[in-house]
View (cartoon, rainbow, N blue to C red):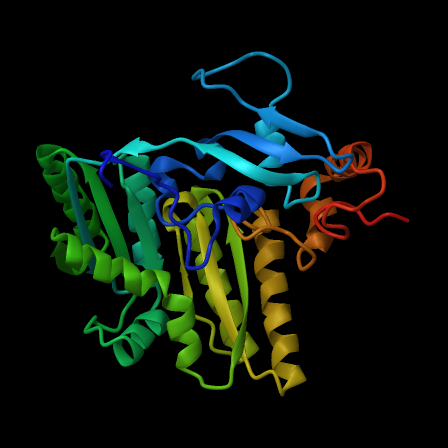
Length: 337
């Protein structure tokens, strides 16, 4: 803080910088500042054979060879062990203001987001929480929000630009039935607002004692976002489970927290089926199986459908750098025969 700089990637609780780089993570601020791909400029990596390499330079750009930084960011530890990172920091904005705004339906809220993005309005954050999430905030976190879908947003800039952006967004929101703006310009009020959003997963779990959750995230083109969210709501309704939807809709990424009783195998099966439908639909829409959580083992079976022959190429790279398969084996790339 004392330098006037900050690191803009803002994921959920318990994230580490190395883990964030390995999964190419993002978070609530990706709509303005990008993901870890955009904010890691160099790495120190230990390879499977013991060599230590440095990637990236201090120059703003380069045309020299392969983008090795990009290769390891998102590799989920399958190619090497990241031991140091050089990160891109940003200047702290002169002015910050945040707000929550209620909408009559998720469709109205998402279409407001689409119009905002298409208007090229520079948002630092724009998040959606559905009615189920808002109800949890009210009962478990002491919020007093109307029990309808909400957008949670934040603007960064100068005093004048923040004011102009807020007024423009207010006009867009009004066209979609937005109401009940609650503005937060004081740092402590903004911190309370985003604390509630960042801890939504734990708050939602606490609302059903004894439950656990299958959390899925997908990312689709902005133009298909309203359709994807509406269809996901139908999937959850058919599953018979409680599955609040929330996420970083400014870049087409949303999550569902599908709660189930671990003592009831049928509930887990229903959660997996609902997740399968959401991911399959996202791929049909030209999206991805995961916008920020990564593949690991759980979504390995979607990789061939999403990447085609490119997935086998990932396996070839893995074999070339790690022929003994000692770096996070079994994850991300095609299984070895």
